[in-house]
Amino acid sequence: MRRFWVILTILLLGTAFAAGCSKKQSQRNPDKVREYANALYNQQLYPQAIQEYQHYLNTYSLSQGEQANITYTIANIYFDRLHDYQNALANYLKIKQFYPESNLQKEVNKKIVASLERLRRSADAQQVLNETTSLNPVKHKKRPGAVVAKIGNREITQGDLDYEISQLPPSVQTQFKDKAKKLEFLKQYVATELMYNTAKRKGLDKDKDVVEATFQAQKNFMVQKLLQQEIARNVKVDNSDIELYYKANKDKYAEKNKKGKVIRIKPFNEVKSQVTQDFLAEKRRTAYQDLINRMTKAENVVIYSDKVQ
Image: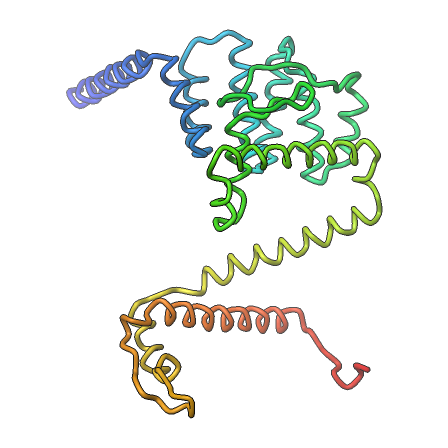
């Protein structure tokens, strides 16, 4: 019996502690929480932004319209930034189901269709199109960041612009640091979006050449993704291995005269960067060949070299 009272006391204390923590959390200024989520978004910390927006949505008493707007923001991050179309679709459907009076519904329908298309569920996308009487965009609460351009009713924010630039190779990104260059990039981005919209209205997304090129691009990207995953898993860098590689290939990093005679062996610290690159390149080639050999054996591949003309 005494043990029962001890357990009960612990449970009550735990409940009180949890309630206190919950109360303390709820005392956070909701405006500050949303501002913090916006800041995470603008700094391209998208998973963290989603977590904070979700916390804001779950913790505070919000109007139906505000709940729909926050859910829409989360969905757009999944769609536009993380390219996670399954989670994007789930959140768009949540708006459709739980906030039917929201003025976002028409835009949500468009995004549902786009998500389904990217998930290669064309039949489902067509069904949504058939069920929707109008897909014209409507104004909705803008996303974090100042609006720097508009295409019809679609707003492009500073966050959008910064994100698109961040997707460029690092060496190219440096070309768009000042305002004039960013403006130039923005104009080109808008021009591309206009041409894409026109091409889609003309049905070019269903053109046989476009469909085939899309398939080939997807296949190549999938292969590259697989190689990245497999090689990253099998290629490990250890300083001792790099030093051993250097010792086995010292002549490769030596200074030589015109006749090819070694006149100076460069010390490891002087050529460490180059040695590391060469070591990784060799490891990747080995990992690639091992992968191909395993797949060739598993798939029972036979190449008839003598029949090749």
